[in-house]
Length: 175
Image (cartoon, helix red, strand yellow):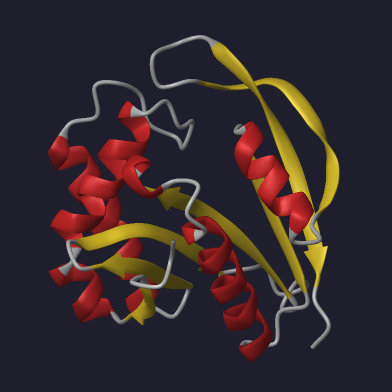
């Protein structure tokens, strides 16, 4: 149940202050098998460097970082990447939808996706793109009206090794 979950968009300073919790979420997801650009074992300092880079992007206005929290801290996150070429000011990428294993299936991912879509609308972004290597995430995106573009076999490695396919999706927003 997501009644005790709150969502908020982090500023640069908040993202830096939350870096330990964000690293915990990333490490938990990678240890759970999520193919999100990292291999096992994921060293804490590498996870912290990743989040420092995300925070810097927030500070430059190139991305939006949304987190979901419960009474114990951050349990999920998603990013809207808006640093696009000049001919794509209407587009953004949705990246790193991460939900801690202990709260999966409780609607946190759906709430984060709804929040990132709302943020995109506010920012005037009408076309969103994302990719995933997770069947449960595919089902979520389809339920939320995302359109499957196609599958690229052998696109990336799973955290423990072995290639996996990646599915690309897009969504056109009514703004």
